[in-house]
Image 1: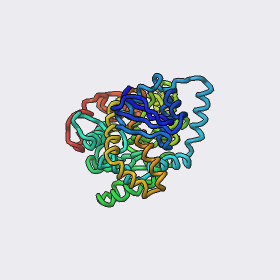
Image 2 (image 1 turned 180 degrees about the vertical axis):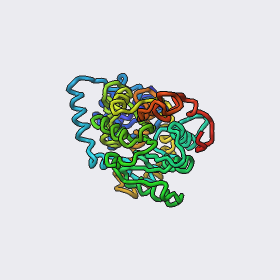
Image 3 (image 1 turned 90 degrees about the vertical axis):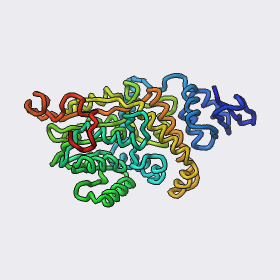
Image 4 (image 1 turned 60 degrees about the vertical axis):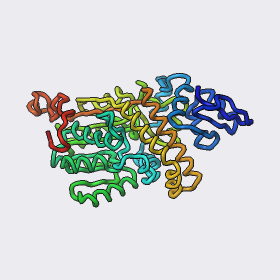
Length: 412
């Protein structure tokens, strides 16, 4: 393995020209590495008990080989399932969700801007053409979602978890919809409010600092998107989440749910300590489910799945693009984070994000976690609705319209 180890007592083992060097302050961290506890080793790096020299890409190649096997935890015992459900219930009240979202997304807008694309789209890009840059692939993703939803001028469109407004603005500017976005992040809310004013979209685009459970159901939306948000919902709340979407969606309407899914069929978290690392430093309260569980909850809420697309390797490439961008600007990132907190905290945040971005890229490449776009309708019960008898919605029950190369917003 192309890694060298600097031992606590001063000795060194491994090839002198190793691509990666790990320096240990104490023997317990070395034992952690030997046990394949990658998540705990990552925590030691964040807490400065281990030092790293080398590229993140090389480090992740080493990490993948250190693992004793597939780290996807598939423990389906009744006791563990009950504990996970109890934890899910406790971690996903409206107040707790707001705190957890703000913990992650309100780190610093300027920090995220260093490594995201100019639109700050913080979700899986769509490399329709493998030669695309990250910014091009993110715009392709935004348009891919709008095409799948068949957005048309004047339609009421809801974006649940609208982030920094990339999809909200794209849909309004290119497809002419009346757009509403919601977020629990104060920073994101303020940023999108400025965008709405700068682009003179008042009256046609609005951004609310609101929990999805608080949305008014009286008017209904023609189309709904939820991108990179339902990972924060929690297993226990998934039926209520899709039930809320069903009530918000007009009969015959279409919803796109885009999010991370588990590699194991049993609701769980990543093994080898990686799940605990993400929970502690990155996404407190985050939960991912296998696609089969998600589709079951979706169906039980009265929504009909009409198309599901797996974009897993697209997210691996997206994450590597983010990781490479952050690695190229580490000094600047350090300075930006220091303006929002103590120097020591800034160093921890930066080290955690370096490992999070590269580690997730590795996990998507390996197939340990996935990314699915799930398109569903709320059938209106009218057999004559749609292009085919029995469609009961605007969905055409073929994929031709998704992939035609029309210009954005032409409605075809």
